[in-house]
Structure formats: C-alpha cells, structure tokens
Amino acid sequence: MSNDDLQIIESEDGLTADVRAMISQTREGVAQVVNQGMTLLYWRIGKRIQTEVLGNERAEYGKEIVRSLSAQLTEDFGRGFSYTALTRMVNFAEQFSESVIVATLSQQLSWSHFKELLPLKDDLQRDFYAEMCRVERWSVRALRKKLDSMLFERTAISKKPEEVAKAELAALRSEDQLTPDLVFRDPYFLDFLGLKDRYLEKDLEDAILRELETFLLELGQGFTFQARQFRIQIDSDDFYLDLLFYHRGLKRLIAIDLKLGDFKAEHKGQMELYLRWLAKHEQQPGEDSPLGIILCAGKKAEQIELLELDQSGIHVAEYLTALPSRELLQQKLQAAIEISKARFGSKGS
Image (tube, rainbow, N blue to C red; front, top):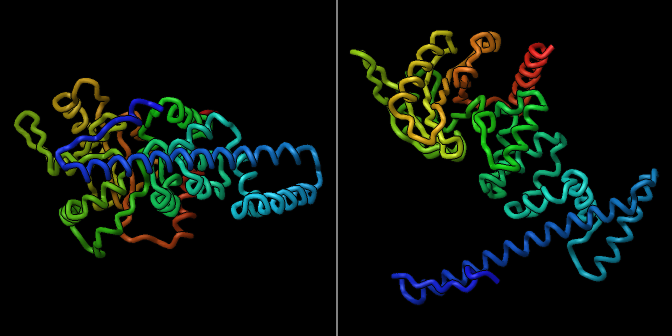
C-alpha cells in the first residue's frame, strides 16, 4: 500500500463531497487493478494452451484440447471460459507474443480494447492502434471510432517502408515519442462541416471555427487552437495564416493553410515563409521547429514527391466534405499506400 492510498481528501466542498471523491477514487483504482489482472490472466491462459498444442500438426487436436478445457473451467468457474473465449485468449497470446509489451499495454488498455484489436491481421496496424490507444488513453468507444474511420491508413506512417514504421512505433513504445508521421492524416474528414457543393475559402474557415471542437477531434489528440487569420508582418507586407495550432506531444506550432482547389507548387513557398517567420518570432525555448499542413481539395503524388515537402516540414493533405462509401475509401487509401511504398522502394534501389 502506497502513501497515496492513505491520502485524506479535505477540500472546500465539505465532508460529503470529500468522502464521495475518496470512494470514487478507490473504486476506479480497484477496477483498474482487477481489469489488468484479468487481462494478464487471459494472456497467460492463451500462452499455456499454445504450449500444450505446440508441435502437434493436427488442427483437430488443438480444438479437442480447447473444448475439453472449456467444459472443465465452465464447471469450476462458471461463465467466461467458453470455447470461443478460450480461442480468443490463444489468439491474444499469438498476436501479442511478448509479455513485457502486454504488461505495459494492460496498464491502460482493458480486455475490451484488446478484443477490438484482435481481428486486425496486419501487425503494424495492430501495433499502431495499441500504442496510440495507450499514449492517448482512448476509451473503447474512441478506439472503435478510430478503427471505423481507418485512422491507420490515413496516417503518414502507413505509407512508409515497414522498417521505418516499426522504428517509429518502437520509439513510441519505449519513450512515448510521437512523430508527425503518427499525428498527421490524409485525408481529413470534414463532412461534419455541412458544406454544400459551392463555397468560398472563408466559408470553409468559418465552418471549421463553428465546429472547432469536432475539428480538433479530427485533427487528433494534443492539438490546441491558437489563432485564426494570424497576422504575419514581413517588411511592409502583411500576410494572414488561416489557422494556428500548437501540438503538446510534438511540442511544435502547427500552421494550417486552407485551399479550395488542388495543391499548387507555389503553395510550398508561401508555407515555408510562414514557418520561418514563426520559427524566428513565435517559437519558444524547448520547442521544435513549427510544421505546416496545407489542406486542399486535391493533390498529385508526383508533384508532392518532387517538391520534397517533408524536408521543409510541410504536410499536404486532402480534405473530404462528403464521404464516399467505406469500400471506395478503402480502395483509395490502399492505392495511396501502395503508390507511396513503391516510390520509397524506387528511392532505395
């Protein structure tokens, strides 16, 4: 028992409120400990069943073992150990094979979180959701939303070579170190703005400000709003940056420029000017260099590649004010991932 467990709450709210707070605090702590214990138990059970059937080539042998064990455990302990439940535990031990990683994840992720992750077949995709869930403390409901919105496929990390992506996830796992590749998305879903077919750039900006809370959720955790139409004065000229944010995890200012049409090469120079001015006049000690997001209606992959925008700290992303069907979106995202990885491959050869 730690000193925190024996802490007496005394606040201005009075006796009843203080006792309520202590009860709630303890209940939450107990629930977390129980949940972690059960998650680790399920992993251990899955691992033990694995060892029992390992080396036997007959698939039916494994099924017989699990059926027999399920019947015995159900008789001894009641519900919770059905054939399906035990099979899921084996799957859990297979997909999350390292006990150290499971122990760390289980401090934040409940068994319900893990159940959402188990159907994912891609190791990188599963590791991404698990680590981001841990770092950003997503609820099960939030995790489901991220999965439904294909967050992994929309992040830059999904388009990087596997070795690079694994290295970034390893840094996130060991040091909680976020990178822009883990934070920035493409495309961004802005269907909640309710914009029709024809609108001006100002309409887009006004709609974002009206729905700022939802826009922040789409940007991702860690973003805080700083300003709109942020004035940048250079010599005798005034420039206005559409939106300025700060990201706590990246420790950087994030400049966002909105474009109604497709991305054009001259947009790079404009954003570079904004970023250098921000670095000179607004960047605080301990912060990293500002980054820019150019949000546009469309873009061309080869043009983006030739401009080497990553080296300038600029991320170009499309925004969608109306969402296509999930199947069509999935096809589009998968095609973008394959094209991007092929380009990386050609650079390395």
